[in-house]
Image (tube, rainbow, N blue to C red; front, side, top):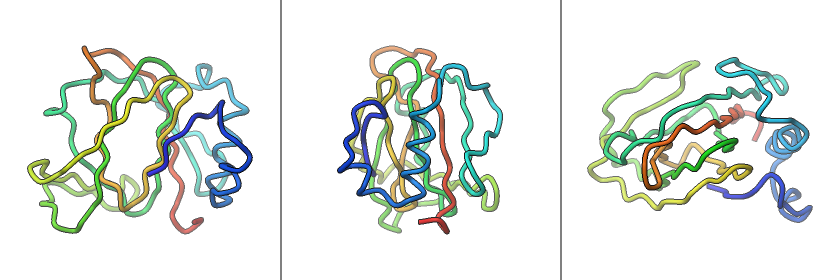
Length: 158
């Protein structure tokens, strides 16, 4: 997991990213993220795409822990405040539901997930690797609508 800000990122930090992540971050920095269309698959390049969504944050008990095996995620908050839980995938988690292929998501039972939490504010991002269990859309104080971009980078580019 990597946590940062699109608008306060140094060249040293950027140089630490693999080229595919660097290209995605650079593309995001050049956009007016608020103007991107909702719920459309937007290709940055082959094997790197994003969708912008508006969703309601919710209590932790309603946030399902998930992992991806084919894609790395970059969650970028555009509007609102969202908390995200992050945990290591130790391989011992009970799978409740899985959707391989294009959807690429495995949902875990949250009984053994030991999350650490961070808050995302507009312009901030979290990079979630296939080894990171994450729960998005956790409300900070009260439910609110957030707008966010979720970038998917095929792990073959890493």
